[in-house]
Length: 113
Length: 116
Image (tube, rainbow over all chains, first blue to last red; front, side):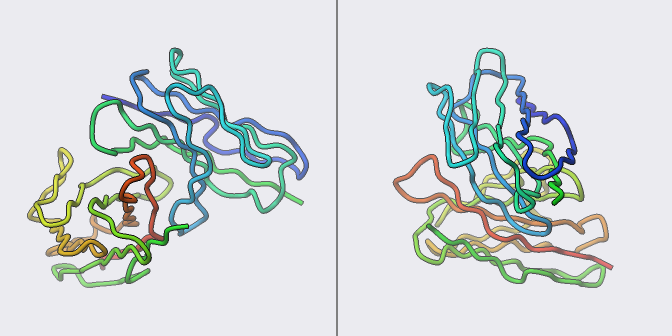
């Protein structure tokens, strides 16, 4: 059974810092991995999707890497801003299963001005 | 981008009543929709996969008679929580798969259910 864990569970940083969020998964046989953002009481916004054959994806100040063999992904946020405050979730799509996503436990990020 | 809506956004009901939650894809057709449940400070757990015109596929441990799913059209799926109890209080989120874009799911804003 695929399990996805995120570390740290919570993170508080001052504005401007670069930070790294970690995601690990137990079964390396994945189809892809996604990073999402969730604001309090809201749905999810997809940030980055990495296919199993890819090593990283970039969008603006965000960079996500994937090391499938070791079961790890990181989300790098450059020059953090208060507007980045949210919960960040990673999710893997198992190699089998039609579009099922297995979500991690999430990292709650607070960026203070 | 594609938009998914949910209605209602928040509902409070008495124990024993049934509650229906709607999930709509506003500007695209979705043959497949997914229903998730999220408890406070926990991650999303897939409850069921909803397929247009056929029976939903439920995850292990999810009672199909408790959580009725209907996907009668390509833009609407409904989740009915029957005989709700306080332990059913949770945040319910749906997502819809964009036809022809196998890797893309768009998520609704969620429905907060509180059962008194």
